[in-house]
Amino acid sequence: MNAAGSEKENLAKRRQALKQAIDGLGDLRPGQLTGRFRKCGKPNCHCATPGDPGHGPSWSLTRVVNGKTVTKIIPAGPAVAQTQAQLEEYRRFRHLTHELVEVSEALCDAALERPMTAADAAKKKPSKTTSKPRSRTKSPS
Image 1 (cartoon, one colour):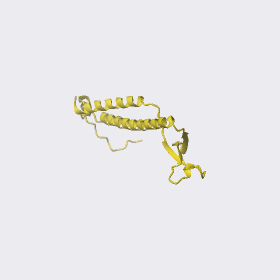
Image 2 (cartoon, rainbow, N blue to C red; image 1 turned 135 degrees about the horizontal axis):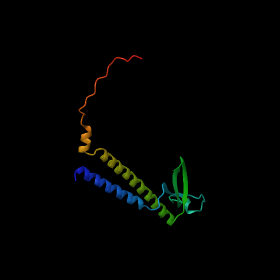
Image 3 (cartoon, one colour; image 1 turned 90 degrees about the vertical axis):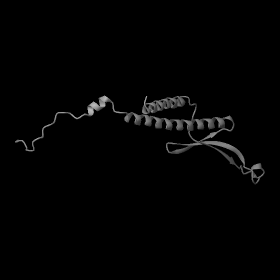
Image 4 (cartoon, helix red, strand yellow; image 1 turned 90 degrees about the horizontal axis):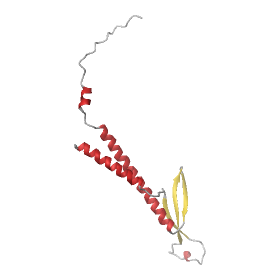
């Protein structure tokens, strides 16, 4: 097998591996998870002490839907870790699909650059018959 054939085979194997990786993805979601601290405003609360970060964190998931920012509150505890895992899985999905497109494009380019076969060469040979030049005079109407 030549180098071009080997490269095509490697690309095809990589494409198949990427498809399997995408198939194995778990729950995913887009967005940005942010933990926020706030001060309640009560003068006797610990959050009123200088340098105290305040109450929290309270977690919110923000993303854009149809051009508008949508925020969802994520409860503290296991839901935060679950949401972080879903966000990471989404990032993995984006990376895998980007790579799949690149590999597929390389395969498409390789298919266009295939070596000329004997049949292709036979089609390209000039014909032995010659065409007669056309007359430049107009025929009477």
